Image (tube, rainbow, N blue to C red; front, side, top):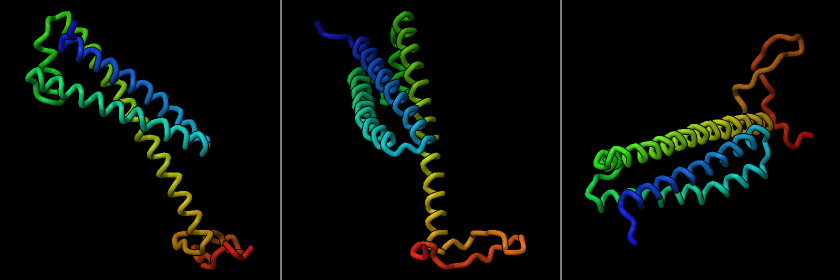
Length: 162
């Protein structure tokens, strides 16, 4: 027995939400690894995320194609129009799925942005430390022998002097 477009869309939306929820769990683990500076776990999480992102892209394309076959435009407008053409009970069930998916997708986006910010801050600290070690940091400041504030730092690399 062939699935109706309503059943197909419901299945796609459920699969998208399940996949997004799994990705969110990985993003939360990645944040824990980033804050603990656990490089091994960070690498592991990074590798694990990719299949979920690919799966979400596949499901999105399936959803868009199904809407197109049914005569609706792609994107949010097409999805909303499809839902509006369903019975009240079916529309309500679809709205619940869509709301759940959007909530999870938003949480994924937020977590990913925060994780990216953590990576960026860590990269800036590393670059600053490397500049100081190489004697190339022009913004470094310290205290002189008398305790006075000075930005006249010795511009010689610390690496190789030890």
